[in-house]
Amino acid sequence: MPSKYKIQFEYNAKLIEVIKRVPSRPRYDGADKAWLIVKDSPLYPPGKPAEWYVHVFAQWAVQNRYCEKIIEREIKEEITFEIPEMTPLAGEHYMLLKPYNYQLEGVAYALNHKRCIFGDQPGLGKTLQAICAVVKAHKERAVWGESFPCLVICPASLKVNWKREFKKFSGMDAIILDDRNRDTWHNYIMMKRQDGENCCDVFITNYESLKKFFVKKVLPAAKLTLRSIIFDERINLFKTVIIDESHKCKTSKTQQSKYVEGICKGKKFVFALTGTPVVNDNTDLVQQLKILNKLEDFGGYTHFMKRFCDGPKRSSNTRELNWRLWNSCFFRREKQKVLTELPEKTRQYIICDISTRQEYETCEMDLIKYLRQYKNASDEEVQRAMRGEVMVRMGKLKAIAARGKIKAVADFVHDIIDGGEKLILFAYLKDVVLEMKKHFPDAVTVTGSDTIEQKQIAVDRFQTDPDTRLIILNYKSGGTGLTLTASSRVAFIEFPWTYADCEQAEDRAHRNGQKNNVNCYYFLGEKTIDKDMYDLIQTKRTIADGVTGTTTQIDEDMVNITMNLFKDKL
Image (tube, rainbow, N blue to C red; front, side, top):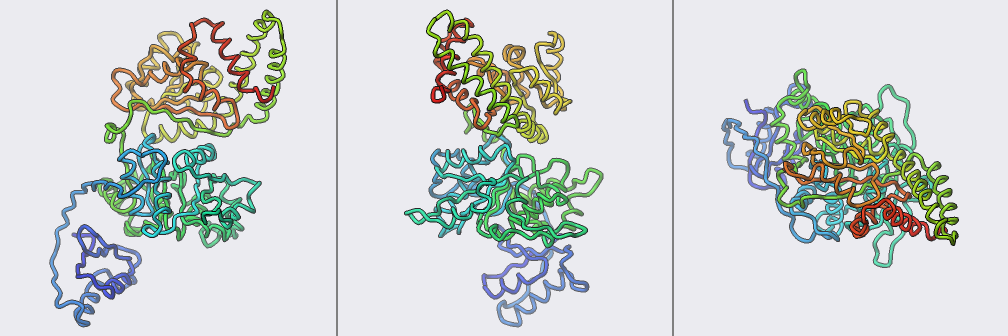
């Protein structure tokens, strides 16, 4: 039996106004040119099922001469669940860097649906697509409506990265909300530049800070609901909300997901970004759809649970669900499908805060003091003797920064492997490898303590066992010689001294047998030497190329680089 009624009629504003009064909130299907009324909905009052509303509406339309007659026919529902084609983006993209064609199609989908999930696999540029969508809507506001100011909600480790990406792709400055601007951030919206635009239109915060910035009070209640939360009125300033890693809102039982739902209520654009919208089962989608105000498109909570969350695995009719998601509020592309548009190797860096800030600053001051002594040493023999100590102190500074990035990296690793993908993770220090192993006890490792046999067992498991999704290596033991083509993702907690060593590590995945584009992620500590070191390693490849291979030459190059990094403080 069909699960819905289809009602077709010539366009008439009055008919549309009346049909929208049906409690189940009929949806217009543009492809079929029909209004769809679901049969099963808890919104129907007792004694008035969907059939009653259909007949009353039809009779009223004829009696009032909006239609000549009623034609009823039974339609056998033969849905192929074929995923619709993505459509190109019309007009300008307004980005400083031209997006790929598939990314522009994602922007077109987002603008047409307004509240949706960007479900692309990690590494395909969901951030760029969201930025492009909100900027294009702003530039063409007569077409799309107001999209700024925009609030970005993301994991704490990605706040700086979002600020950098907005600047990189759109040229726009963003403000990260913190205690210094807690009571004044809205003033940047009120103040205008000479061109009439707001002084700032993009604000970034993390999930844990939502209560501090946007909730005035939570009323005591047996169950947390939107009615029990009194929000700061300033949330009404936002026209768009971007929710990064939206699967963190997969349950309605957490305060954070309720805060996100309340903040998004009534917003014109809501863009949820996640490569893993379903982490456990289909129930993970319920709260995310509520945040998007799209749950009614699926017949409401009761119908969704009954239709798509049945059985012991709480996942049923998955093909139909995927089709309905695509038609309502979701798109997803896999790397294999868009591989022809991607370069063979992509590098990106992710800036994150470090948890070892105080220890880092103390060590940095010690290094600067020692560099002053080195700089003032006139005797070449003395400088040569001190050079080794500079390298030791520099290594210590890098190690402190690396330990401070572990939590941010762990969150990133979870997002990748929880989505069913494999990841290669490199560290320089054995201690960092062991610390990551504590976070991921099922991971395999390759370190200097392993025998040749143990290393091979770890590699074989990673290559052949689908349940072994993470391999953690240090550069000396795993940076060369190994084939790890089971993954096309390589992440770096810390990195070695030369570009050549980085490239060797990247090429564990980027080698014969690899069928996908390889994505390389470098984690850089905010306000540490990481960014400077990364720039030097990636852009000044002649440093690595010019090194003769001797330890002395590398030491001399790196000490000179270190001196240059801190020249303003010496």
